[in-house]
Amino acid sequence: MASRAAIVTQDTYRELDAERRELTATDADTLQTQIDVARIPAPTGDETARGRWMGERLRAIGLATRTDDAGNVIARMAGSAAGAPVVVCAHLDTVFPAETVLDIQRDGDRITGPGICDNGRGIAAMIAVARVMQQRSATLKRPVDFVGTTGEEGAGDLRGARHYFANSPPPYAVIAIDNTGDERIVNSALGSRRFRVEYRGPGGHSWAAYGVVNPVHAVARAADAVAGLRLPRGTASTVTVSRIGGGHSVNSIPEHAWLEVDARSTSETALVQMEREIREIAEAAARQEIERQTRGTAALTWQCDRIGFRPGGETPADSALVSVALEATRLVGRTPLLATASTDANAAIAIGAPAIAIGGGGRGGDTHTSREWFENERGADGVARALTIIASMAMLS
Ligand SMILES: [Zn+2]
Image (cartoon, protein in one colour):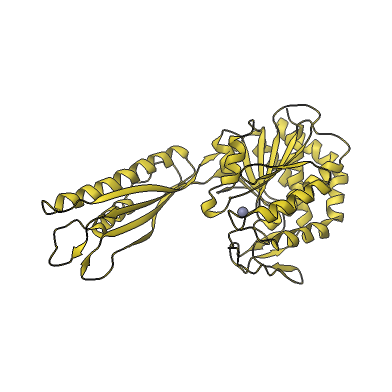
């Protein structure tokens, strides 16, 4: 028997026939929006120009917008009833530094250039969905918030989404539109904790001063212990020593050495456990080095700083939101696939809200490179899938 969520999705899909035709008729406009947005620089931490552009586009379709303290651009579409909103978000930022030439080229069916998919496609799909929903005569029950978020990529650590969810009433459901595709449903949020461990000592001549504490030896002990760490059982978790450095020359005891560690998991409990163990390892490596030092010489000092934080977690496969997304994917003729990734949905899952991330349609590749490419294969169907999920959630109570 079909679940209530699946039945609401089927009904909503049927009611959205005119909107789907509109999306197909305006497919070329969506593509042009995608190209236009990819041409506006938006490195993580400097999304103002792109945010302003998005605000103009949302106002042009009749929505009022505001910008919050984190630079997120927000537009609310009222529902017929009050209640917790459905939040749709698309990140504004890209991994490309400000000086990157945003050369977007079209060659037949293929469009190539930095950020054309991630997140040019997500932003274009969100605007297309907002436009047809705003034109819709039948009102939805719940309000829908459209949010262009800042700081999603890399060291941004989901800054915009985390700020938004920390300062808004709890949402009913969150749908992040990120990159391309029309089959994947990211319901498992890959979290991370990143650390930089540093050791400092007096340094000295490698022969004459031998016996003073050696920061490189401490780093090596720590790296060995992290590499041998037993991962939390029954979870999908990884830990990697990803960078290491220190020392000045082959005949000196170094004054300074460091390593960086990237721990990842879909389980927040596992991340907490790994953080505790990495901090213990950092301290134990220092103690082992201190035990070997010559009496009366200067001490080894150390510190372990967290340099990255993304919460992990999961929206259950049998939740209403995932059921709606599965059904909507089938309704547009595609095969749904549950997946794991790190997206703005992580920030929502961390506050206990049901959240998923989906693609904005079409297909692409070479993401995070200057060769990033997009092909508009069934692109309008991908946008229709996003519309079906968002509208169905806005109809549920
Ligand atoms: Zn992205």
